[in-house]
Image (cartoon, rainbow, N blue to C red; front, side, top):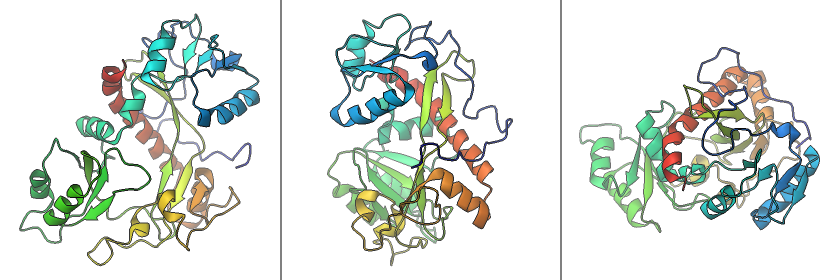
Length: 329
């Protein structure tokens, strides 16, 4: 990607009081980081002693671009990079004045599928499809909700292993029998079962998703536990096959329903595009390019979509606040 990709359209200043925040957090931010934390622009040192091998290169590159010094000697710094609970527990005891931990304790655990699903269900998030966690909810209960005898056409559910990655074990089902079979064949004990969104916003006839990135900073604001800063670039993944609403004859066509690179890279239809500014081609695209493409060639207002992504980030962080505190240590 270019060093300075063109940012997506800026959402209206008064889109919502719950939009992703652009303000600095209060200096009174409690709990995770010192009250007298310095502005990150003045950061001079990042301690990478706890960084994992696959993180070191990108963190070193980021530090050098910011003009920061980096160290691997556990000697402290303005930012202390931590990954695990053990890292947090160890380094927070010796956290110096003006130092920051890189991760908010507990947030990593909240990103597990089952924990996040429960949090968003409890919060009543409007953007979240109706979801059930197995084994907390039985297959019979889910089937009674999704497949009542008199209902035609049948609902569609998507089953995801709660500990799975890379599209493994995901199945789309339209009957109680198929749901039970999908659960029986899981390699993991837990699963998330969700209502399948049958009429998604398509990108040139194909399903797609977007990975957006947000910085969450603890705040003492009365409306929220976190200030949320949304990155101006993201990653869009596009299915290799055209989308059709789910029906018995196409449920097995995984590559029309799932965007996972780990699956689509084996298809002869997989397309790699070298141009990060091209939002019309490739199974991986930059978000900024896709928004420009949609704004120009589709009946989609990019600024409104960008504002909606901010709302989604804000709502997700609000839902994660309580479980994050419970899982912190």
